[in-house]
Length: 198
Image (cartoon, rainbow, N blue to C red):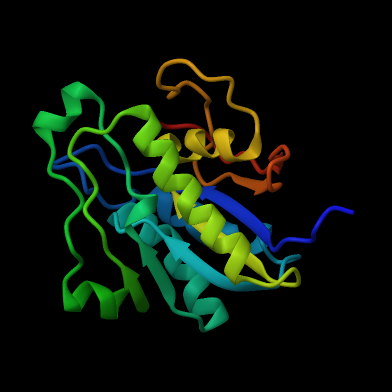
């Protein structure tokens, strides 16, 4: 008999600005998408919100955090990763300031160094480690929201059994502010499409 696991909802951040640096804010469209997530998640009893430390993810999670009066748990294993070209142009994930932690209702931070330039295996390993922790520490009646990036969502295919190996997979067009439910070692099911953006 298959062991019951918590429900994990993987969400890509909303539409973001492209400049002036990599850790950008949401656009007006992204702000609207973040608020629209409240309706999309209304049928779920969310018990925990996890987020990448990047501002676009925190800003997407913020309306949900406020509506549920829950803090956001930041985990650096959910951080964006970099291609070779990006690795030299952009900084690695930085620590949040005290002001940012207060602004986005951050209640706990799991910080660890994320390599400036990762292999696909390293990305898969840190993503799988995060998901394993969720599966083991949360009860079957819990619903977990995970706010992250397209690259780490692609890495979740390995955890779910969809990845077939090979080189880096950045091609799956996960929708901006779209929701995917993760099945442990199964197949992610369902999505709410809100548009696309790299």
